[in-house]
Length: 81
Image (cartoon, rainbow, N blue to C red; front, side):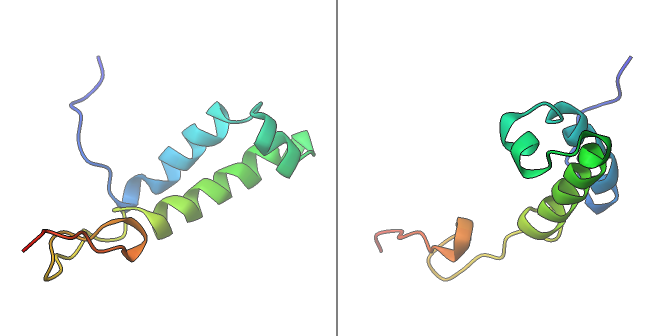
C-alpha cells in the first residue's frame, strides 16, 4: 500500500526526475530533443532534476511581497488596495 501523500522536498528531486523521465521517454518533444534512445532516459532525468530544483518550491517557499504572495515569474499580484 502506498504511503501518505506529502509535499515533495529537495531530497525527492532524484526519484521524481527518474519517474518523469520514464513517463516522458516516448514523448514527441523529448524524442525530438534527445533522439538517441540509449541515453534519452538519462538526459531527460537530468533535465527534470534541474527543472525541479531550480523552478519549483523544492528550493524554497515563496516569500510574501507587500502586494501579496509571490506569483510565478516574479509577477506581483495586485490586491486592489
